[in-house]
Image (cartoon, rainbow, N blue to C red):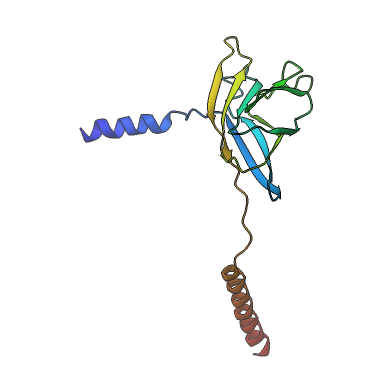
Length: 172
């Protein structure tokens, strides 16, 4: 039984993980009741195995009505009350098209709101023969936080100790 479990675990570890497309965002407070959300569409499908899976349509589903602040060059949109469907106007991957090919990302999808909205549902549509879709929830992009006081103090103490060692060696 232990041998079978080891073999199954070995096989599972060798299988590639199915990476789904990602919609990440950063949020910025522009005023007391004005928030901007900047989205990046990431098509992290395999560029060899799924070469024809270009993202050409992104449906953003918001909890409140947005103002479209900006879109990437070569993209346009239709808007309803709480959603924006943005689409590539030039078929195909760059340099001639504006679709998002596998292994690439595209930023510049910016929307403004009168309140914080957080993560949102989205749907990507691909240009493969079946016009496949992928739905998910956006994720906040990781933003490095500023150094904390404890880190600054640690570095200062380390530099003082280093200085003490150097001064003792030079003085000897």
